[in-house]
Length: 454
Image (cartoon, rainbow, N blue to C red; front, side):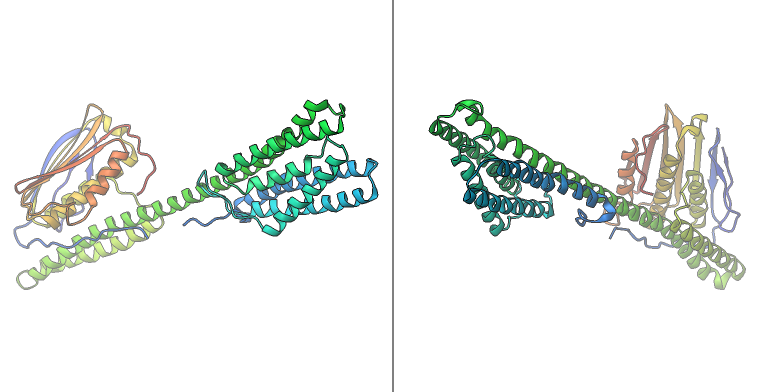
């Protein structure tokens, strides 16, 4: 462990957390005084529905869903019922009526399903989709009723229920689950009754007999409804997942903004605090010690250059706060403020196992605690104690002359850091006893640091 100390105009202090133990006492020259500068706090400044945005990939899935749903429905109606109409020996009036009814039912089904797919999927499990177009709903229902009724009257008890089952399933897609299942149950019961009555009236045992005539219509309805609702359910799940992904991306952007704001606050606040302190010191020395005042102003110029460089670096996302640098900076700043700074750095070889993110977090604690000493106290003495024991790195910073408690009405810097250390598996506590204020941070050597916010 190495530590170098000096006065306010001394060269930058280097602190290396290598194995060893050292106690360093730093006192600034008696001339000059302490300044207190303010600090700023940072904060951050809807996810749009992109179901049809080509960039999301949902537009392709939507086309696939449309062809699977509307295309399959039209294909089944036209091929299955059209072939039946053309091959059956139907009267001319019945054939014409069936063709017209089939065309109306097919077009209405396609239009209604297209409208259903155009609706925005909701997050609520029991939410009702948009209302269907009433004109197309009436046209499709009328066509299906005519088509099914003619085929049923002519004794075709095999596929007469295809068109009515299709329209009932289409209507069910526009209903919430609470209203959908009663409709399907009532339609299945009605179809079974109609099929049984028609079979008894015709006295025909063909097509599976009376029992088959009762069971086939509700079975067709169940298959049709399950297919349509299943495809729609897959579409809605995909849309909700895409919405969640977009929300996650937006939260990541906000987290990055918070990280940038926190780093900018830490860098600028720290530099401005020292610049204000040294400027005040230079102003006091201007009359009594012009040479010393010139030295202080040169350091102000150097700090301004460093602040500009660090600001550019944090914009590019390169700058990281390290524990070594922050302890060195704290030593120099406290010395410039005429505060006796005692450092007791006792780091074992296990300290090398402390992750870069953990060092970054502890460095932020040193920076925040140093700023609080300058801003919220009239301290004459400060202590920095860093040690590693039992697999835990512990940092303790204390000072006397505390006049108010940071983290209460003056800001939330310590509270924000405490949340981040807890997320990394560590702790951050602080307490004030009279005029003495102590901050204690601890992190396991192999901490789970989670997503970084700065």
